[in-house]
Image 1 (cartoon, rainbow, N blue to C red):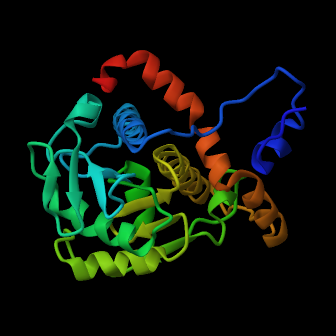
Image 2: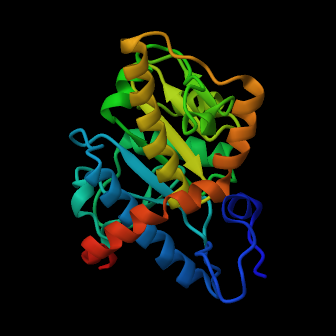
Length: 268
């Protein structure tokens, strides 16, 4: 029998010999892992583009560099999510200096993500955009309720940043966002949108996708009537089933398979 991480074993049970499931890869060199992370980041942007998460030049996903973890890779300022390739990505340090790449970084991306990465060494990747339902829900200033199985992934595992002061340009505000995120997987930025983190690009992107959809589901339910909440014990149990780091990484697999098949140029 094959041994699986608990999050997957609970879903499929022990696997017979010869039956496998994809698992996070291991690397023999920093260069190999860096290339993989950049390709994953480019794929993440293509997925954001496919979901329509773009809004002008707003939005960014970052991934920590494996060789110099106090620096991170991010999208070039003003480039369409749907056209980003691995070779287009730029690397910046926590002071906003561009170390690799020929285009500038969005200052808001640097201000927010640098502070999130600095405060959360476990956050390999972070994702933020001005997605429609995320920003609509953020205007309410309330947390997501446990009204669906998917929303339970965020039950007592997301914060609210309720001090919107315009476009984020100062490091102090980035620090306040990081504080509101705390040890959670996500934070709702009031009057702004959503931000998620993860131990991989795939995990951070998946949390963003499913959080955006959970915001949409709650908005729809609230418009139709009074949503019935899942009780706390069951919500916590469900979070342990669908809200783990491995569950986030694995649930992103179908999106990655689709985008890598349809957009092979992202690897350039």
